[in-house]
Length: 428
Ligand SMILES: Nc1nc2c(c(=O)[nH]1)N[C@H]1C(S)=C(S)[C@@H](COP(=O)(O)O)O[C@H]1N2
Ligand SMILES: [Mo]
Image (cartoon, rainbow, N blue to C red; front, side, top):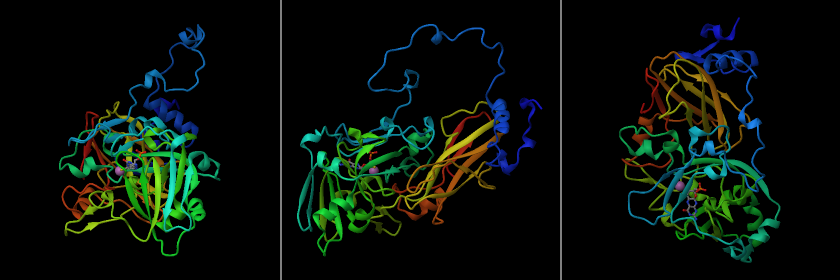
């Protein structure tokens, strides 16, 4: 049969609203048929005209590559605070809907800066380890580069990610990057923090660390010593090259799966202490005020979460037919075990395919074939991690906290597709 005549009935339905079994597109034949229905056009005359690029030599070699000029619109989304603060304060978000796979290109890694990006010459930079240690040590960057190192592919997510959906009573019609783009995923390489702590020698009464950045915010946080010793990395490289200035060049702390704020950039000081220091960023910020007036403090781990990025708000469907629903899932607790997708407002759910690799504390790409009938649809995804944690509905999540509490919002995202093919941010 000609692929254009393949019908929906030939594909195993996995849930209502046109969701197809996640295995349906794995066979090349099925994929070719479906892709033809979705997007391709029949070739008119093949090979009659050479593309112009074949008629003259290409551009010169370059020493450092940049994206194609036709991709110049793929940019971070800058968001400045409404209050009057220094020009470098605020965030820029990853345009999740313009990317695929799980790795964020370094130039599109989100940024969250409390007082701008400092310009640090690594030749003069020092990392001090002091406090409750047998011998205080300072490390030059060259010294750190000599230590045995490890690599981890993992996400960093700001505690305030998805604030747009938490803070506004009405869903804002902005892109998925603008709502959920305070998360990015890189391969980080550097020295296990435990190696440096062991060298300094931890005193018996030590139980916490204070970590401080060398930026104008002097950003600092307290971290339980045991977790930091076993899991934190003094990162020097990002996606194979030295850290970008925005990500903390020349040295940042990486604590996989923990709130972005803990991952102190421009790291210059680690003090071993006997308790948390109650710094500004763990008292006035990064605490979650509940309805009963009490606040959760030191809520370090980013909860399990997922979001469909294709399609998502601001995008327009190209008519009824075949689509691949694609999204990202993650958990600060470990690996993603399962992602379910609904196209009928939560009445039925289909399990999405998880694309390898599925790593702990890492973005995981999920995909599911969808045949959109052209009727209004409501898309949602919910992730489960390997410990059985899953995501609350938005109304459940909001009910746990005081008004305007924005941190750790892992509630289910709804995308409404109108009959006209418009995709809208919808609260469910
Ligand atoms: N020194 C310092 N470290 C910092 C910050 C900062 O402003 N100064 N911002 C923190 C916050 S709130 C987050 S979410 C992450 C963001 O990391 P990124 O900018 O590399 O994405 O860095 C953290 N580390
Ligand atoms: Mo953050």
